[in-house]
Length: 177
Image (tube, rainbow, N blue to C red; front, side):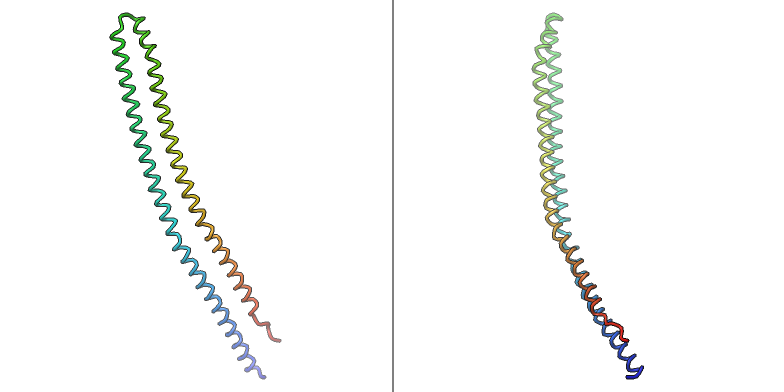
């Protein structure tokens, strides 16, 4: 075998090896791009769920703020009516000690009203906290369940890439002497 034939054979071997490596690289790239497209497409569900959670949170906030504002109006009306009633009691009093005694007697009614108002406000806030917590837990658990396959797909991609690299190393022909 002369030098020209040997050079032609080496060139042919190099082309064959380059073609195999290019085909493997192309196949791996196509698979990776396909998986990436699937992953990008899969984000539409979490985006939709996140939007739904945002709408639910907005509805919760609106509902509870409606309750809070309504309760504040009731509290203010109660305080105004309480003040007017106290003034009427002062007008009816015959002496300063009588006025003082009537006001002291009415403290129990006022304290009871304020206690009920505070308890109602606390229930509204507690219910709002529970509603938001439940929504957050639900959204988080749904997202964490969907994240697991993505992690597995990423590991599978890394393993496939490592196999291709290993195969590429094995297909190299040793240098002829």
